[in-house]
Image (cartoon, rainbow, N blue to C red; front, side, top):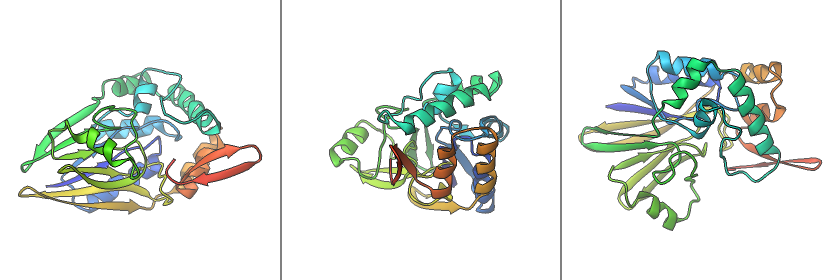
Length: 254
């Protein structure tokens, strides 16, 4: 079986189309989405409708929860500042530009998904098994915390998103995978990111795949809709920002 995992699309329809087309070209058998379909990007409605039409198995991300329930905050653990402000602006805009049908779909997404393929058991969560929506499991997460995260997991493989950073870790006999972000990468590479996992007779192999997409069109949509310019900057550079008085500092992995 050839499985594909992607997440953190964040309203980037051009990136989603490119990723799904690339998966089809690579002969993927089944596709799974790790949440955060909405927020930040200019096409939340089109992204969710595509997921619904293609019947892609999807779990809930923190932005799906926030838009679905029309919350004022995504719950992200950023310090107060411009990045939080931009996130809140995009969240409010996303709520105003999604239909009730779409918000109902987001509200009904499961927070985790467990399944088995050829003897290998998978657990999908957006954040972590201990905090499904909000915990960041990063490449630099301390080993003691990683052990705490997986010690109660019965499955063989944990696949999560949320950080927008591709990751592969082997922890206490468990494989922890993150495909990176399809629609808003933060690892310095602006190409859309997803992961292919091949399972054969209990053996797992994996590949992080990067796909070029029409960034220019997404950036133009951000401008046309009056969304903050920082959202376009993140897409163009593939990394996020920290705004201070009179300066812009670009920081990997935030």
